[in-house]
Length: 309
Image 1 (cartoon, one colour):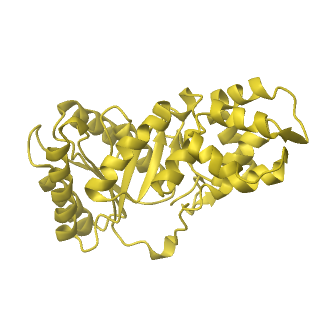
Image 2: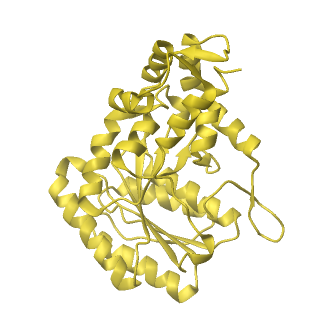
């Protein structure tokens, strides 16, 4: 379930080829690639040290990560040399055994308002459905009435059940009822939304901690993943938000949204490396199908293909 899948008659997921994924990444990173090509307009076999440094800065990679990646590289850098260093920045990329996932598999979605949490939940739900899994949603962002309404519309469009309550009600109760319903109905995937009002950090921290505890009461070991949604257009400024959420409840992985609308794709290196967290997916549009399983190799190759012969 953690990949790019094509729907098949027997509902068994078939992963896209490496070339397919590279093509998707190139399309999603078009603005980032445009910035890089403005520095290296003609493909080369080797690129000098200063130029590589400049194009990494252009892509919004933080300077301390650039220094880490380029330490000890020669004055003229080959593709293989640079590729090795860049891929190593994602050394925390996850290795997940699908056969060992519990049922139901419970994911708690966290992040600030406006980062794209609700749309990302819809994308995950659609992804799981297309791979043959049953899904239920929990409208746990009871702070915003609009969040409940938006998630309800997605549940209707995707034809998946939703557990919800009124604005202002206890989000922990929503999480419990969602998981309880999934257990009773033998549903594969549970996706629970949460509030994201980071400006009231103490209140949000207490609320999220309570939700985590209640999830475990509803089903031992839940939530199995706490996924942080980060707005890709914010580049490296999103790291402070991520650190705050990680301190609150501990984050298991990241989904970066809106990457198609920014030239700051290089921030993914910094986000993953500095937070020591894996990036699971990137969002590349507003459609429910606009989600791409993150691959460090394909991500790096998509960038290097544009500047190296």
